[in-house]
Amino acid sequence: MKVIVKTHSGLVFAKNISYKEDVDYVTVYSKKTGEFGILDNFVPTICFIKEGYLYLRKDVNEAYIVINNGLLEYNNKILTVLAREAHVGKTKERAKEIMLEVRNERLNENRKSQIDYTLLEKELMQTIKKTGAGQL
Image 1: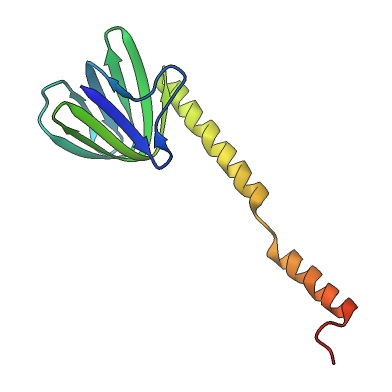
Image 2 (image 1 turned 90 degrees about the horizontal axis):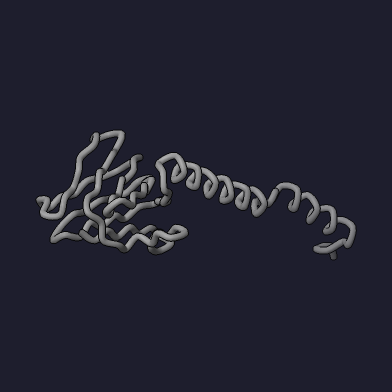
């Protein structure tokens, strides 16, 4: 079966794993709905994954994709996941670590880009007073 995992950033990639690949079977785990497996000729399925992961196995190779807010659809031997956030790792723990690292990087970037508008407004008012702008 083919597995495709997409986020708003595009396909989910990892160092030797780009997930648009064929696998033998997938185990889906969601905190809300529990765990189930999908084999090649599984019935068409749709599932929402608020927090969970996919366990993917191809021969002896295995990988985990940690998913946050995702919609899973299985139909005609194609498993598609559209997720807000998804990260791949060789183990579930590593995939979670990657997700936390990415979240922390984004949080730090957001903190750097936030501007204190009250300080800027105060500086603007002082500059207006010094230059006498707006007075006749």
